[in-house]
Image 1: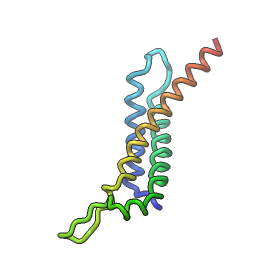
Image 2: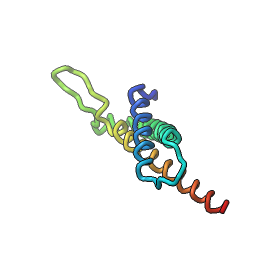
Image 3: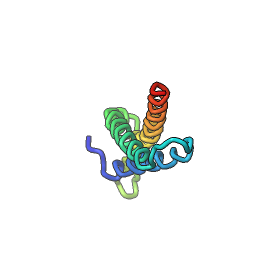
Length: 116
Protein backbone atom coordinates (compact mmCIF):
# COMPACT_ATOMS: atom_id res chain seq x y z
CA UNK A 1 0.00 0.00 0.00
CA UNK A 2 2.70 2.43 -1.01
CA UNK A 3 1.78 5.91 -2.14
CA UNK A 4 3.47 6.97 -5.39
CA UNK A 5 5.84 9.92 -5.08
CA UNK A 6 3.91 11.92 -7.67
CA UNK A 7 0.86 11.96 -5.40
CA UNK A 8 2.89 12.99 -2.35
CA UNK A 9 4.29 15.89 -4.36
CA UNK A 10 0.77 16.77 -5.54
CA UNK A 11 -0.46 16.85 -1.92
CA UNK A 12 2.34 19.19 -0.90
CA UNK A 13 1.70 21.49 -3.88
CA UNK A 14 -2.02 21.58 -3.08
CA UNK A 15 -1.22 22.55 0.52
CA UNK A 16 1.25 25.25 -0.50
CA UNK A 17 -1.25 26.80 -2.90
CA UNK A 18 -4.02 26.64 -0.28
CA UNK A 19 -1.79 28.39 2.25
CA UNK A 20 -0.71 31.12 -0.14
CA UNK A 21 -4.24 31.75 -1.40
CA UNK A 22 -5.66 31.85 2.13
CA UNK A 23 -3.34 34.72 3.04
CA UNK A 24 -5.15 36.87 0.49
CA UNK A 25 -8.46 36.43 2.30
CA UNK A 26 -7.15 37.21 5.78
CA UNK A 27 -7.37 40.60 7.40
CA UNK A 28 -4.20 42.59 6.75
CA UNK A 29 -3.76 43.48 10.41
CA UNK A 30 -2.93 39.87 11.26
CA UNK A 31 0.76 39.14 11.49
CA UNK A 32 0.62 35.63 10.06
CA UNK A 33 3.35 35.05 7.52
CA UNK A 34 2.79 33.42 4.17
CA UNK A 35 5.41 30.83 5.04
CA UNK A 36 3.55 29.73 8.16
CA UNK A 37 0.29 29.31 6.28
CA UNK A 38 1.99 27.54 3.36
CA UNK A 39 3.78 25.13 5.70
CA UNK A 40 0.61 24.45 7.68
CA UNK A 41 -1.33 23.82 4.47
CA UNK A 42 1.38 21.53 3.07
CA UNK A 43 1.59 19.42 6.23
CA UNK A 44 -2.19 19.15 6.56
CA UNK A 45 -2.68 18.30 2.87
CA UNK A 46 0.06 15.68 3.03
CA UNK A 47 -1.43 14.08 6.14
CA UNK A 48 -5.04 14.08 4.96
CA UNK A 49 -4.19 13.15 1.37
CA UNK A 50 -1.95 10.25 2.34
CA UNK A 51 -4.41 9.07 4.98
CA UNK A 52 -7.36 9.13 2.61
CA UNK A 53 -5.31 7.40 -0.10
CA UNK A 54 -4.40 4.59 2.28
CA UNK A 55 -7.93 4.24 3.64
CA UNK A 56 -9.45 4.16 0.16
CA UNK A 57 -6.90 1.55 -0.94
CA UNK A 58 -8.58 -0.89 1.43
CA UNK A 59 -11.43 -1.14 -1.08
CA UNK A 60 -9.43 -2.93 -3.78
CA UNK A 61 -11.73 -5.96 -3.64
CA UNK A 62 -14.62 -3.68 -4.58
CA UNK A 63 -12.59 -2.14 -7.38
CA UNK A 64 -11.64 -5.43 -8.97
CA UNK A 65 -15.04 -6.99 -8.47
CA UNK A 66 -17.07 -4.17 -10.00
CA UNK A 67 -14.56 -2.88 -12.53
CA UNK A 68 -13.37 0.59 -11.56
CA UNK A 69 -10.21 0.07 -13.57
CA UNK A 70 -9.97 1.16 -17.14
CA UNK A 71 -8.69 -1.70 -19.27
CA UNK A 72 -7.62 -1.21 -22.84
CA UNK A 73 -7.87 -4.31 -24.98
CA UNK A 74 -5.59 -2.88 -27.69
CA UNK A 75 -2.56 -2.62 -25.40
CA UNK A 76 -3.66 -5.26 -22.90
CA UNK A 77 -2.98 -3.07 -19.90
CA UNK A 78 -5.02 -1.60 -17.05
CA UNK A 79 -4.68 2.04 -16.04
CA UNK A 80 -5.18 2.17 -12.24
CA UNK A 81 -5.10 5.98 -12.00
CA UNK A 82 -8.75 6.16 -12.99
CA UNK A 83 -9.85 4.49 -9.76
CA UNK A 84 -11.67 6.70 -7.25
CA UNK A 85 -9.07 6.36 -4.50
CA UNK A 86 -6.66 8.53 -6.49
CA UNK A 87 -8.80 11.55 -7.26
CA UNK A 88 -10.73 11.40 -4.00
CA UNK A 89 -7.45 11.63 -2.08
CA UNK A 90 -6.60 14.81 -4.00
CA UNK A 91 -9.95 16.30 -3.04
CA UNK A 92 -9.37 15.18 0.54
CA UNK A 93 -5.96 16.87 0.58
CA UNK A 94 -7.52 20.14 -0.58
CA UNK A 95 -10.31 20.05 1.99
CA UNK A 96 -7.92 19.00 4.76
CA UNK A 97 -5.55 21.89 4.05
CA UNK A 98 -8.37 24.43 4.04
CA UNK A 99 -9.86 23.08 7.26
CA UNK A 100 -6.45 23.14 9.00
CA UNK A 101 -5.81 26.74 7.93
CA UNK A 102 -9.31 27.82 9.03
CA UNK A 103 -8.86 26.07 12.40
CA UNK A 104 -5.47 27.73 12.86
CA UNK A 105 -6.95 31.16 12.16
CA UNK A 106 -9.91 30.49 14.47
CA UNK A 107 -7.70 29.32 17.35
CA UNK A 108 -5.24 32.16 16.83
CA UNK A 109 -8.05 34.74 16.97
CA UNK A 110 -9.43 33.08 20.07
CA UNK A 111 -6.06 33.28 21.84
CA UNK A 112 -5.81 36.98 21.00
CA UNK A 113 -9.28 37.70 22.41
CA UNK A 114 -8.45 35.89 25.68
CA UNK A 115 -5.21 37.88 26.10
CA UNK A 116 -6.97 41.25 25.73
